[in-house]
Image (tube, rainbow, N blue to C red; front, top):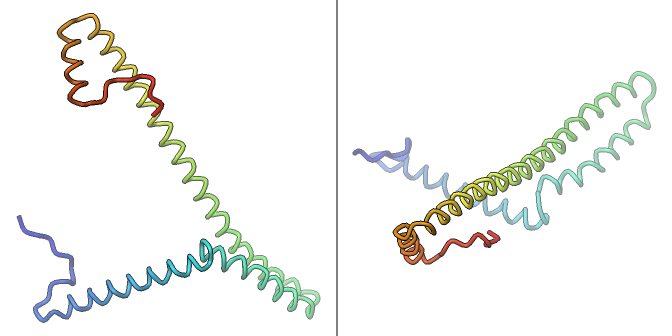
Length: 157
């Protein structure tokens, strides 16, 4: 079976490999710098910039609006409203993603609990059967010994 090689990494003179190595090193440096900035911001860089940019934008808008009247003032207000709506859209998208992540975690937990209940019911049924049949009971005891974790329906996890 032939080994797959990513495009651009194979070259007779090594230039493609060199370019790939440089790109890889640059990407690693960018990621490290982004992590440092995120740590310095105390969280999301985007949220830190947005928290700074919002008041700056409002102040600049106020300064420009003070000098305008009538149709020019309305035109500038309309422009600011469009810009602000775009900024708010980002906030709403971030909140929607946060809610979806929470929903996914809850859904995953619920699915795990659903299957856990079914497995426990199945194991209890198997144990009840084994209790009535000596050969099955011996086989279950041997299985428990080999697994080293006897069935215990009182487990919390």
